Image (cartoon, rainbow, N blue to C red):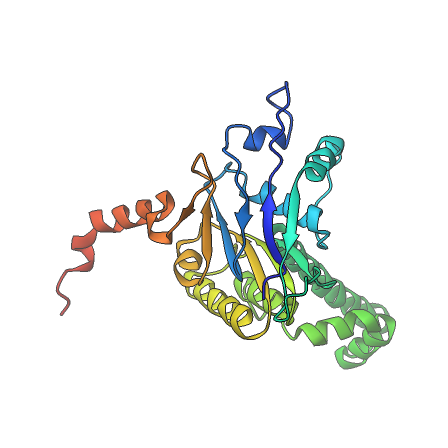
Amino acid sequence: MIYLSVFTISKKKMKNPHIYPYNVFRRKEIYPIIFAPITIIYGNNGSGKSTLLNIIAQKAGVRGCETYAYGQNYIDKFVRECSFGVGEDDSGKRVSIPKDSLYIKSEDILFEIKKIQQEDALERGYVFELMKQKGIGKEAAEKSFVSYENSFYSRKEIMQFAQEKYSNGETTMQLLLDAFIPDQLYLLDEPEVSLSPENQVKLAEEINKMARFLGCQFIIATHSPFMLGTLQAKIYNLDSECMDEAQWYELEYIRYFYEFFEKHRHLFCKDTI
C-alpha cells in the first residue's frame, strides 16, 4: 500500500548559506521523490538523509518527528514550503496518512534500551532494599515490588525480554518488530544500529513481508549494505547532485565494501584442512 506517494523538497534559497535545513539541500537539483511500498533514502554521513526523513515526517504529520531548541522557525518555514501527495486505494479514492504511523529514529531505540536498563536496575535496587531493611525473602520482596509499581512490571512482562538475558541488538530487533502493525506508514532512520549483519537481513526480510502482505509502507534512511541488498526497495541516492534513483550495488558505500573484500579475496580462498 502506498500512503505517501510523492514528496517535493523546498526549492527556495536563503541568502545566508549556513541556515539549517536550507543549507543541506542548497546544492541539489530538486525533483519530486516518488515513493514505492519500500523506499530507501541513501547517503553517506552528512548527506542529509536523516534531515530529509524528519522533514517528511513533520510535513505528513507522522508521530515521532523531532523539534529543535534553536532554528525551529526556519525548519517550520522550510517544511511549509515542501509539498506531498497521498496515494489511492483500489477504487481510486485518495487515502490519508494512517493515524498510527510512526517515525522511529535509531536514538529512539537506544533510549528505550536505556530505559529498560534503568527500570531493571530500579527493580533490583528496590528488592534489595526491602530484603535489607525488612529482612524479608527475595520472593516476598519481588511481590511487593509488583504491587508498588504494577504498571512498570506489566510493561516488562509484555516486553518479555530483559537486558541481562538479551543483547542490545536483540532488544533493538524486538522493539522494532513490536512497533510494526498492519496498514501503517513507517519512517525509519538507520534501524540497523546495534543489529548484527544477520539480524539486519532478518529485519529487512520482515519489512519486505509487512510491505507485501500487511499493507505497510516504509521510508528508510540507511547505508547498511545488508539492508540495501535485502530490501525490495526503490533507492534514492542523496550523494548525487540530482538525488538520482540507483541500484544498491552501484552505490559508493557498497562499492567500497566490495573493493575491500576483493582486495583480500586470497584470504577467503585459502584451502582449509
